[in-house]
Length: 468
Image: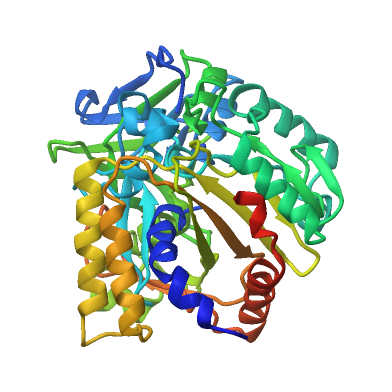
């Protein structure tokens, strides 16, 4: 493979990679959810039928559904509301959310043990409040493989799509990307569809025609307001377990959480047939909280002084993140702001997507430039060697990014899967701190093979004149 192109695209690729490494704003007027409150208003002790930890893309629709049928539901979300942050609600401010490194950022930044910058959602609506907003359905094959009822899945999709999914307006940059994918053979042209189909398609978006984001939190409009309570800035520190005579496994019966002022609260399950604690705190937060509650590898828990409830070595294993490669396509003129709309789904299990014209808040762009220069100049840890000429180009490019609008588009290539997996371990006993996470990117040769095949399609065959 010819690596000469890498020297030219390295700088822009890094900048764009920071923006898009994550994988749903709402309207100008926030929904009037009277049941969404700050945890500081919660009583010291409360009881509910269902306690859901995490108000993200799983927790919100689940809570709305369970609130019907006579059950009471409590949702504990460690972040705030997506409706009060213009960086979340406006498509033009997308990059600013991911670059926010403040202690209360809705996209909590962290660096994996692999040395890769990343972020995890800390906001009602979860990842749908901070990601690029692409909406698609799962493939029919995947639904069958999971053993799900096809008809019920279709009904669930329609339930979601009525609130958060839209057909995007296809403008010049995304049109050029679509035409280029078709020209290199990512066929057929499937037009606009929510379905997962091989070929090139225009997928759904959670940004409406005004550029406002609609998150999973919007699905709470389906909830029974008299049966549900959502507490914001409620950080769960521990799930409580007890041993029941005659049962081999302990039973969860409550949680301990703290509000924004650090005041401790307790929530317990009611004593009836409809009682369950449901953990939907994400791929990182869920195993972390299990460990903090005493469920996980016994040797690891004991090193942190945690009493072992269940010695389960698989908790924290199988951590995976979808590796992505990014190409920057500069433009002499500003291009329209668009996030992921067009996608090419190849037969060799890669996805090719694109975005353009990201807006950057000036101080955040300066911070990115400073951070990037530090990465390029550090000597004790080098995940890759950077040729001097590439370093110079990289620094110049990052400095240029401090203009409010990025005069460029990006093409993103991701692999399906991946096969490579790692693990998660606790750093400390703080549930709001990101634990130690290792993803082992490209450990499996098949992941690297598919990645290279996707890059070859872009670099060697893509009709770049489409973007002229």
